[in-house]
Length: 177
Image (cartoon, rainbow, N blue to C red; front, side):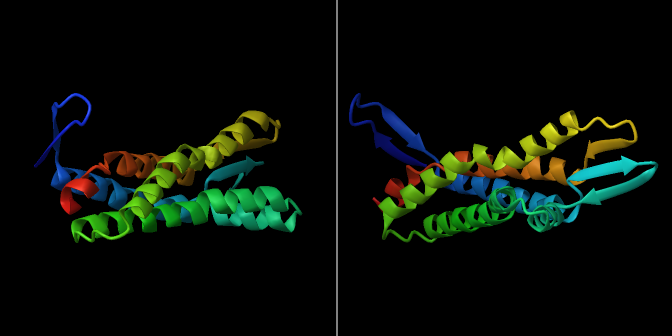
């Protein structure tokens, strides 16, 4: 554990670099594991006259694109597929660079960290769209239900946010200072 003192009040600030890295890494691995079913299993399932059909996130994006809803397709593709992968890569890079004690470019890493933290809640836009669709579509012959993919996606977003929150950026100063 590293000990630092607050510049303002002089109190001892305890920093646990190893614990921070382990917690963040565990959350990141769990998030990646939930990313797979989030994209392989249906996010929405529709049942019409007893026929159940499901669509994954990518199938939904392709369907929206073919129907001409280009802006919605692009937003869902970015928020559901591209941004989570970029978050995984950036968090993995931050964890590896801190663990290997690479001390160059600390301000850039701190900016990357805050970018990940700020974009975290916006990743839940897909879950919101599914909930909205389930609530809005009430045909007598058709039922829309959330699929396994939406639960996995919600858990993946939550775990990614926990991974970012668990990473104490102050350890950059302790390990490289």
